[in-house]
Image (cartoon, rainbow, N blue to C red; front, side):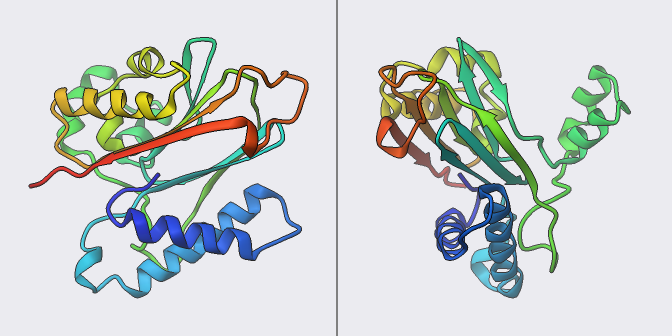
Amino acid sequence: STDWTGGEAARQVLTSYYETRDIPPGDRLKMAFWDVNSVLFERSGEVFNRGTTTLVAAVVQHNRMSVANVGNSRAYIIHDGQAQQITRDHDLLSEIMHMGGLSMGEVERASENNRLTRYLGGKETIEVDVFTDIPLYAGDVILLCSDGLTHHVSDEQIALLVGTGNPEQDCRHLVNWAIRSGSEDDVTALVVFLEDEVAQTEPISAQSAAHGSESLPISE
């Protein structure tokens, strides 16, 4: 799931990831993100890249997941009706809150001045957050999404809107909810549902997962 130049970034991640072998998935994701950053940095003067590109990607291997992100696109696991955010947003308020520097009231007042502290293509090199060895169980739902969704749909609402067993329907629910709630940014969601018939003690493969995606650009 990406923001702004999503199609190009996603294709580059896939290409770079499958060009590297015999190293852990987390390291492969990090290298793929570096490749995307290099491409976008080289093209930073072109018209199509006048915005900022954020990116989140996940790899499921057996019953474990690896996730990488730059920016404020997020990865979630919905387990037992609870939405757990895996990634950490790379924006000013999130960084300050992580350090305990602002109260909630101050955060609300400062939210209009929030800005990204990390995104792809802005610098020649980029720090990538990688989360590995995340356990998965049958019935879990994986959500990758852009900030156009999470700015208007809370974690509690996410947990309520997904898990129907129909990922495409879940994506539509999430995107439509964000739009009705006033989102003025691109809204992108990708949902992967891990089938109930897969035993928790067995590896979860691509063949045992259903997925859906939905993206709705907002015209300015």
